[in-house]
Image: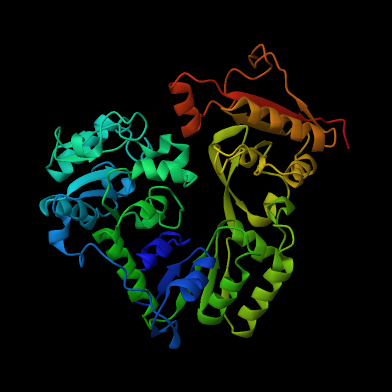
Length: 462
């Protein structure tokens, strides 16, 4: 159980190359170090013959006594991107994800399914009823939606009178999910005996449905798809195929410097993508937009480049980028890296959000918007550039507004254009971008207001 819970917290994304000449692992940089320091237990040959610790043997559904599943309520966290995507997509369907659910039901367990989903995965699926019908056709068992989390209408055991398998509400509608809220985790796992995690692709996320629920179940198992994906990782780390390349993305280079050094000392090549690429390009002396360079990480980036140079490890980074012009949001253009500095892709607006780790704790509501961020936005924003503030809690929007007015150096003022409808309390009635976030859609659907404000950088301030 301990190894499983630890693994759920890994910041891992995997990419496996089918090329016979290249074996690749794409890891968020601190994953490798976490694996090595906290989870791995035995030695094996990897990364070109050097010794490293092997992946752990987790408690899996495959090895769990099948007779112990009889009449037990089993909560399965499934991957909606695998099971709910439209038929006929190019991606290969993962039968192991379905087999986990079927195996549990055929073993006599009372199966409860839980996941998050959106129309991005399948435009035809949004409400729980349509998702349940879709899963019923895949599993060939009757799946029924129940409201055991939000309304506590029916207990999980009583719900099985309606169908073979239960489906809980969409987790994307609950803040407690991303906050890994203990109370939400307890409600989610109420009446559950065994937890089965089959959500490997996002196991790096510390969620209530992957980490929090494990505290309240007497057994925590890896499902067949999770086990299969982990086995792929094991085979890759044990491979002696050359070259061995790490594809690295994400941010926060300072916190991940040790892991990056470990990769540089073991791999034959490092491919940097996303925000991480700008830090490496900056260390290599290449021109990059300063607003994309993380503060205080130049030394660590230079040290990493030096280690790679000493070992003759090739460093690759993007030479051009897909850019979006805010005046033509549907139009994407390719710009060479140095052309971004010329301002050709006219990025004119910034969106500032205030994500909250746990809104049940009022002190946490202000922790995400710091003075340093406000000052950086005020300095880096172009003339007439805009900052959009939004929350469904008025106190949070007021706090963000006050922070920008206090630390914005007098450069940011509220926009009161005729095209923007304003409430009697001074908030924007509508989202000026015309594209609503998933949470915004949920709040408005339940009849609650959003508190929005647009700030603009004055052209007269220096």
